Amino acid sequence: MAIRVLLVDDEPMFLEALKALLDHDDRVEIAGATSDGESALELATRVRPDVALVDLAMPGMSGFELTRKLLANAPALHVIAVSGLSHEGDASKALDAGATSFLMKGGLYSEVGDAIVDAAATAH
Image (tube, helix red, strand yellow):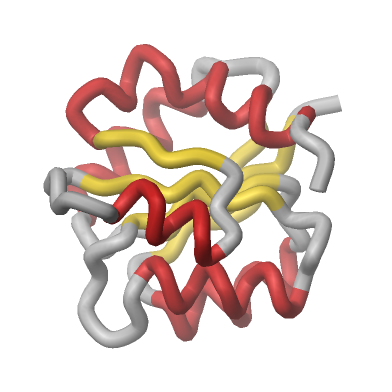
């Protein structure tokens, strides 16, 4: 059974590239994709993903805040925090917010499928 994934990123090109990459991974099913925190909360309630890939730097609701809200609504959800910028402390702040793991966008393409499988296998 494929792992259902919600993608949340405000960069349309990155979101499309990630969808295209994951479409070729039989272990993963894209349950939904959106570009902001508010719609991600609504979408997560409807599609009930197993894992959410959440960009940390989004306008409006930050990825940190979104992670906390997603997990408050669905404690069994696993969140993988994603960032294109390396700000000191982002990884630990994301983990403190409840993320299962943290990935940099630059190396994401080769490891994203494995990271999703690993996150889904992690016990809360």
